[in-house]
Length: 344
Image 1 (tube, one colour):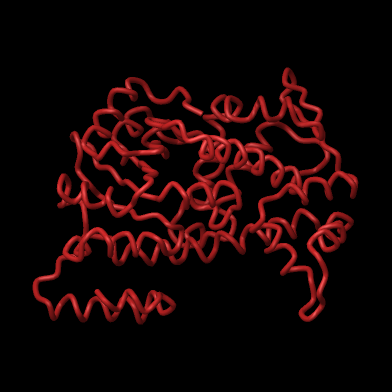
Image 2: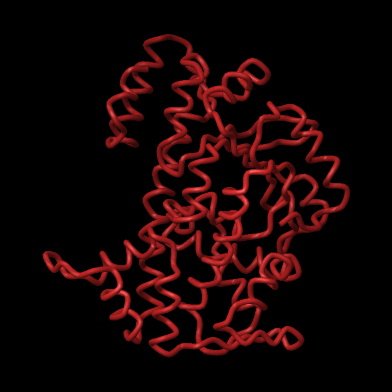
């Protein structure tokens, strides 16, 4: 999954990585600071914020070490120690971001997620937050020999292709496929309504088709349900009910659950296979799949964005300032957070 990126990037990224604890199961860089996007110059790519995700086996230990090395990166939560930071990390998409961090004359943002939470998202699309990022080209900076994680990374790409097939017509271009895949993790994301560029998906895909091909060409060539005309950049898929049923049965568990909840009437107890067979025969099958994905993305994107109120570096001068701030956050933004947060 390590792909060609902006020039001279390898050394630049590894110099950033050297500032952090090295106990990482996976580290990758992503976003417009790594892959050029439509409408942006090369100079902009070299000055945009750099975005990173670090997967760690033991979040408490990693944050403890990072607090000793990079305490200034954290918000007021640093005063409550690594266990509380790890508690906050678990909610929403299971990732804790430190943002607007100056590093090597660039501004960076980095998220920390546990290896187990990452594998869960990759395999089952529990939130599609980090799994969605890994469905698009990223720059892998470090990866250990965790076979479960490696298998989950591949499974996530296959699931992205399957979901996209269900929302596409019988014949389409490679670019159509990659647009559909890139859009998966934005389905239902409220940030696409408030604040985000509406042409974001197109801007990601169009300049980076070659990077998407390197991610997905082997999967497409090995997929028995698609005719992949690589030299023409065209694909044809089986849109029969039988073909769609096979694809629906291969979707990640959480998406299957969301789809069955949409279709199955309340109080009617039917098994998943029976419901998915019904969806496979539905002319609106693709729309149902899209709605299911939105049902995964929407809540995780809202809670994850709300978490930035806690993880952003807000200046609090007194304990009374902190108490009032915490109460407003919990009551207004995060009313469903467990009571253990109240032990801060």
